[in-house]
Amino acid sequence: MRIYADNAATTKMSRAAIDAMLPYFEEIYGNPSSLYSIGQTAKEALEEARKTVAGAIGAAPAEIIFTSGGSEADNQALISAAALGKKAGKTHIISDKIEHHAVLHTLRRLEKEGFEVTLLDVGEDGIVDPADVENAIREDTCLVTIMYANNEIGTVQPIRRIGEICRKHGVKFHTDAVQAVGHLPIDVNADNVDLLSGSAHKFHGPKGVGFLYAKKGIRLTNLIDGGAQERGKRAGTENVAGVVGMAAALREAVDRMPENTAKLTALRDRLIEGLSQIPHCALNGDRENRLPSNVSFCFEGIEGESLLLCLDDKGISASSGSACTSGSLDPSHVLLAIGRVHDVAHGSLRLTLGEDADEAQVDYIIAAVKDVVEYLRGFSPVWRDLCAGKSRFIL
Ligand SMILES: *Cc1c(COP(=O)(O)O)cnc(C)c1O
Image (cartoon, rainbow, N blue to C red; front, top):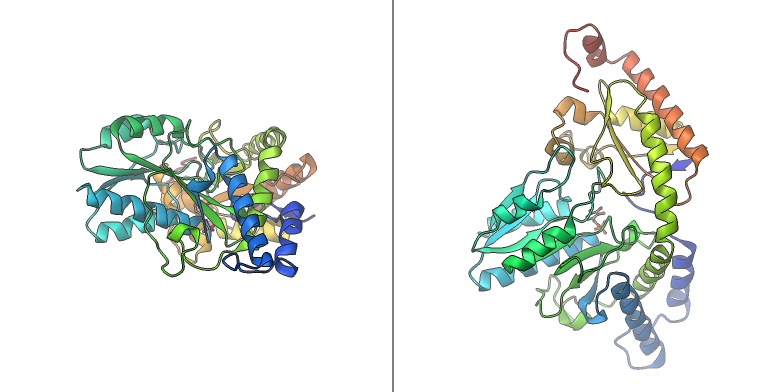
């Protein structure tokens, strides 16, 4: 059996997205800035896609600019809000410790440029407390940036309440919604969001294309200078096929959301239930407020990497905290932020199910993880010391 259970890393493209894209490679390959018909037809497709993307999050088409993905959208959102803040003499930014590196590393860069950044703690449940956001807001705060849903532990943040607080205090609010778009219902107006990032390859669209929503009136800073594409805010000939594919994937994801959510939630809960039977393990992130597809565990006495390799041998593609995969030996900043100690954080496993998963696959995963954890613990010195009482179990 081959099971792809790493949908938070990327997703398989939907048939609808592939079919929608093909004509823009083969027939309608014109440059949208050209005046002849195959250029103008491409331009129309781009604007049609803008309407679809805007509609999926309750925005107006003029509030959407297309980017090369979630990372670029995060960078542009933060850099733009910081520039606006600086103009008004405000240089304080609030975020939290479990953001994606596209946000955290941009904040680090802004700190070097003189901005002051407050990174809020999250609870053991991986949720940001809106009261902490309100308490951190100062006279000179120009931006709050809190992700919609976390890519490692799947926790969904109280975005609407945080948005209300930001609105009340007149502070701009950005949310990295890359894990949420196409998976959770989003309404930028009801959520009081000023800036929002999305990425096609997380909802069965192509890689290398995404979008930034910026509320009307927010002036964006260009990251890429050149031509006047995207109202002068993002130069470069548009990725027409990519944008069309993103829109097709998003339309399908939104149409099927109720059905997919019900199905995935049931499978997720079955998987959590099954894995919880393994001794000395713990679920990462809140049990209720989590993405329908996300299951994240820590197992004591094993190495996440070994677990992944053994699971791969059994045909399962999974992930273990994103830091390990980047070749770094540091455990995931997200797991440390929810209070997992280093040793425990190293034994993490993230399984993110796709819409085509079924109960048989989930049961196969449960059996495989049980086997592999037992096998690896069999020759783990850390596990031996725990069992011999030389060190204490944490989980
Ligand atoms: C994947 C991801 C990103 C980066 O998106 P890319 O399109 O791969 O650049 C940013 N934030 C979160 C939460 C993500 O999951």
